[in-house]
Amino acid sequence: MVTKEEVKKIATLAKLKYSDKELEKFSNQFQKIINYFDTLAKVDTKGVKPTYQSNDLYNIFRDDIPIVSQEREALLKNAPTVKNNLIQVPAIIEE
Amino acid sequence: MNFNSLTDLHQALKNKEISAQEVVKQTFAEIKEKEPKIAAFISLNEESSLKYAGEIDEKGDFSNFLTGIPLAIKDNIVTNGITTTAASKILENFVPIYDATVVKKLKNAGAIVTGKLNMDEFAMGSSTETSAFKITKNAWDQTKVPGGSSGGSAAAVASRQVLGSLGTDTGGSIRQPAAFNGVVGLKPTYGAVSRWGVIAFASSLDQVGPITTNVEDNAHLLNVIAGHDEKDATSANESCFSDYLEDLNKGVKNLKIGIIKDYLTEGVMPKVAESVKNAATILEKAGAKIEEVSLPNIKYAVPTYYIIASSEASTNLQRYDGIRYGYRTPNYHNLEELYVNTRTEGFGEEVKRRIMLGTFSLSTGFYEAYFKKAAQIRTLITNDFKRVFANYDLLIGPTTPTPAFGIGSKNDDPLQMYANDILTIPVNLAGLPAMSLPNGFVDGLPIGLQIIGKRFDEKTIYRLAKFYEDETKFYQQKPEIAR
Image (cartoon, rainbow over all chains, first blue to last red; front, side, top):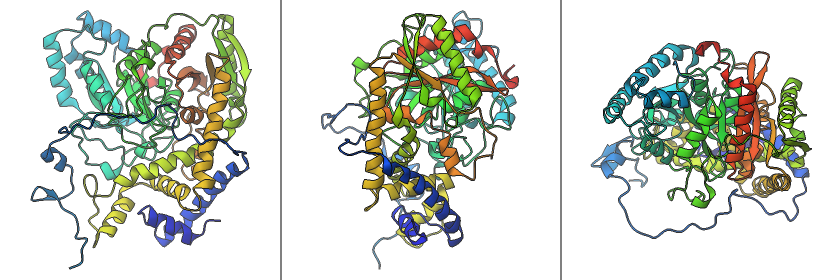
């Protein structure tokens, strides 16, 4: 059973927020999906190696050579707010 | 459009029966006429398309297959200077400063990018209804969904606004909409097409692939977009690639084809199952060897997929924090609030649900029971395929359990929506190539035949598909809007 409190905790980890009203409907749906996931518990996977990717590639290396990938000006065009040619963000150190 | 395929259009351009500029003008006229009904595009690129077509006409060299040919791109594939949203509010005003490798390859081959196509937000959905911007309609019946997540890519081709498009397929997102719209859609082998510049959903499953009106066109497009890319660390080595047109006309004689028994039962509409058996009969008559095969672990594919895809999505989508690009909430007092409110306001309901499911599956105390368990079952599913592919060249089954469902009919029940992907998901988990090919109609709506191949053996998929297409001519039937 995933409680509403646990759903809130997961939302905090995911940097999301649900209002109390939304939480009611969402927790219910969430629980149903987790119950569905739980049907996998019965599958015998003892000693089975997990698959994290489907091709057989392993450690692709390249030479460490610096290149210009993009110009600063172009990159800053998509930033929400820019000041003095830098991305502006709220202060993280208390005054 | 007066042309039915890229191949026809290429011939006309090559023979100078029509200029690239005329083609582009005609294309945008078609788009403007059909879009009010279909709503496949998020943005159009008319001005630069016309300009580029002019340059192409001036050069006058149409020897390349794609030169002067208008195509359209799913909106989760970045295009230099053209807004790319992944159908999300969080990227509503995002203008990329580079082209994805696949876009670069199409442009280098002379193709014209006419616009960006609607999709489920971040490709999370099976109906294109989770788009933050619009609801795309099925080309055959505008009360039905076009499928998803590449709903725009399939509907635009089926309604003949463009004759080719790119989609992406993480759990069926090319094949299912191709089936629902009666067009040809291929999900290539994992690693065959570069993911560089493709907005990540689930990185171990995502692949870009072509959607076209016929098989030959599809192989042409794959020839252009496939290949090694050093910018994608999961890209396959050059030795894995070949000319996808090579075996096109070899027929099906002596091909060993497995018909997947498990794909014909649970939840699959009897008429859909029947269509696959009919296909098997046609292939058998032409000299293919057909036998029933079983993949016992695919019954676990849906929960396995939703755990793995959601987990990967939850980490991939962490980057949308309102700092460097994309939407930033106006409502914040500190950095934490900026993050939380940006994401809460910027992401839609389904995307948030997937992030939550993924965060849960990866979190301390649940990782072993969910993410690791799913990754182990992924191995079992992959082994099922390996076992049957030791004895067969190809596998066939339906693409979807039913034809297209009604707009709004599955919105309230995520589990019902997820279950719809049962027949397409296993292929992504195993990294195999698979196609959806038009296979007739059920209740007036198109359905698809799914053809699954061995890794990097797209060539044999095209071989069967071309034979079957010539034999049945289903592809010649067009929806009302395209007649």
